[in-house]
Amino acid sequence: MTKKDNMDNDALVLTKSKPKTKKPSMYKVLLLNDDFTPMEFVVLILERFFNADHQRAVSIMLTIHQKGLAVVGVYPHEIAETKVTQVMDFSRKNQHPLQCTMEKE
Ligand code: TYC
Image 1 (spheres, protein in one colour):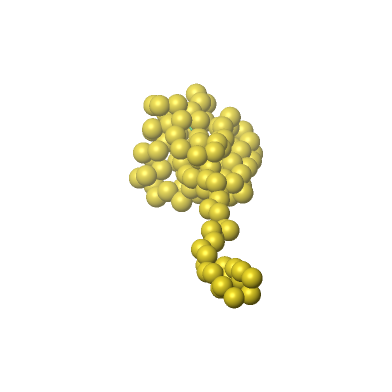
Image 2 (cartoon, protein in one colour):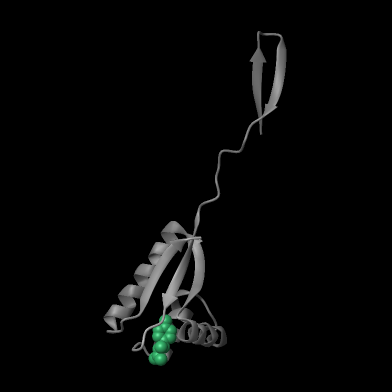
């Protein structure tokens, strides 16, 4: 990570340059409570799309049920968008009104 600055052909100066790669911005994926989606369906969503084991999925689902929403994962933009789309598509196909959104961390 050094840059060679050759100044007037005699002094060779080594200067540090900043690395040019940036960490990607991260996005929280949120699952929202509603009065109609069955608890078991939310548990299935958490197991299938957010890799939660059954016990953790039940615990997160109950948090959403009680508090109104929960962050269910944090991902780079494209992955977060994919998760939201997967959840919304799967919920719509099963005729549940479950809502999933993302916001910048
Ligand atoms: N509140 C729903 C019920 O009582 C369960 C539920 C939990 C729905 C979490 C959505 O994101 C949710 N059947």
